[in-house]
Amino acid sequence: MKRGCENKRLVIKIEQIPTVLLILWLDPTRHEVHFKQKSVNQTVNELISFFSVRQNVVITMHRDPDADALGSSLGWASYLIRKGHAVTVISPNDYAANLAWLPGIEQVLIYEKGSDQLLCKQKIDEASVICCLDFSALSRLKELGKVVQEAKADKLMIDHHLEPEHFAKWMIWDTYAAATAQLIYTLIKEMEPGVPLTELIDQPIAECLYAGIMTDTGSFRHANVTPEVHLAVADLMRTGFDASRVHRLIYDNAPLSRLQFLGYVLSQKLTVIPEFRTAYMVLTEAELIRFNSVPGETEGIVNYGLQVENVVMSALFIERRGEVKISFRSVGSFSVRDLASAHFSGGGHKNASGGRSDQTIKETVDQFLSVLPSYQASLLSVD
Ligand code: 5GP
Ligand code: MN
Image (tube, rainbow, N blue to C red; front, side):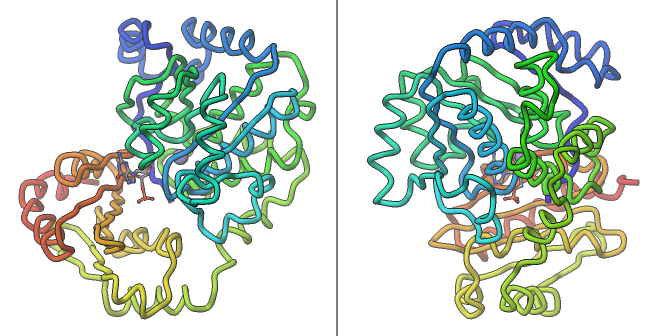
């Protein structure tokens, strides 16, 4: 689902940003050492010492959580529970049905649900640490963002999106990582050096982390796939879980209506503008209702635009509950993150980003079409 990340990476404590940035930009080839810099060791050492006594942990993730947000959170939760910590996992809103099989998901509290909200607030109040996984801007939490911001607990950010906000005491932030789940895999290893991996990561943890890495790499085909991704996955697979089953549960597990909806979108709603090498799809609330489409079911549809020859950017506009949610995907050097943040209050990765608008869907699409000429040169220059 996610396409390649920028080739920048770092894992840092806030105070050390200038030094680390310098190291990174001076030596852009040192992928393999991104988790080994002194500042990283310091952060990890602090975490080792922090987690050496029992902690009250809250783990949270971005709204509309995908398999990486949920998989990394549940994998980290499971590891911490095994280490004797009290752990609560909170999602800002509900998750898609094809993720309901993830091991441990029954423990997830949904902040948006009236029946869970009080307990969420209580757990956040009692927490000694709030782990913020797979997002780096508190606005990605919806209403929960304010609660997390005001909480007295220390925050630990573990994320791979571009341009993080600096709200966390500890940051394990690495845009070179294909998925937050990959960062969790590395962090767990770093927390207990020398311990055999099979003693740290069991099958349920491995399934959760594999699900995150698999989906964020588009099943290992996007530009964010690195040797480290395959090495991590090889380690995870050694626990013996059924990787093919994970793929099936996520991708080949849709109600018939979703495939029929996809057929409708591809045959009736996909527009290609060759002069801008752009494909886009617009889905109104009425169409979603007609096809009984629930949140999560539109996930991945935007990628189809990129299957059209010569297209380098695909956009999907979805009208839902009075706002327009936009998904962008691109290939090569064209940054949809820049476009999303410049015009649609959004962000994400270079090749996979999203944004929102509270204008009407027609006004939003018109705005998109009106800015395309200013991106024409970059769109045409992609190899
Ligand atoms: P998706 O299209 O799958 O919803 O999102 C693609 C990527 O863009 C994800 O990495 C996601 O974190 C990011 N993204 C999606 N919506 C937003 C948004 O409204 N704001 C920001 N900053 N990032 C977003
Ligand atoms: Mn992710």
